Length: 317
Ligand code: SF4
Image: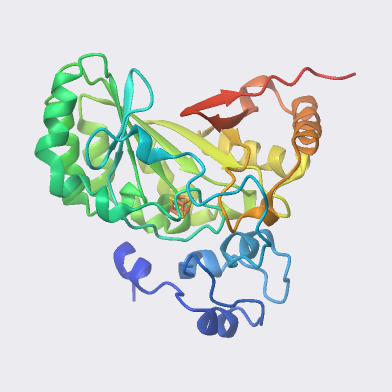
């Protein structure tokens, strides 16, 4: 029996007991950020391998607290003039389109974000007025949570509303759901995003080549009329290796997705064990520069003071 994408999200693994049973392990215990693993993602985890790079991303932390880590490393709230809207950059605003994610990534910098205070759908009129009044804004970014956990109907409403504001030209959607539950890329979603007058940019969040399944490759063909990009987070134990990152870039490119950003970890409490030193990160990146053509090389960036700042790494001979 075929199940829909939202049934799939509802059926996710949500407790340590179930995770241990289904993945034949004993390494899960309940942590600060609740467990949520869609079955499609769980199926890709290598049973019996406690160091599996997919498993490590969803395994609650047993990290010791470390200086420099906090509950809100990017201080999003400081840049929020109205509920549900974050305005850090001159030309673009970010909307917290959904409180929900299809997966809980244990390194997530928004794991402590107060979503109750930032719900755009209950505050849409005010958001629309803000966008209309800010003529310098030409791009709206849907983030979350994950905007693709909203129904197609709700996404259509948001798209129609944004396209009614003349000076908005670009709609960017950040999503991990499309990768971890590929059935989310429905025909209806593809139709909504292909038909709008807005230039739509879909930014996937994929960290490891094994996350890209045959099913995803097939489904993403429905989005080929959009601009498709990917961002990854550089995570110790997961993808801290130039050959893994190079394989990811090649696999993305084969699906017409361009590698865009490689983020250094945001220092959120509970993610201490994923941190790489700057020196190690730069060494990995230099290796990657040597093995990839420039167009396959994501930019190495660190989020600072509301901006993604590119780290310039000179090539070493
Ligand atoms: S899908 Fe994105 S927002 Fe959701 S937990 Fe993962 S990193 Fe955080």
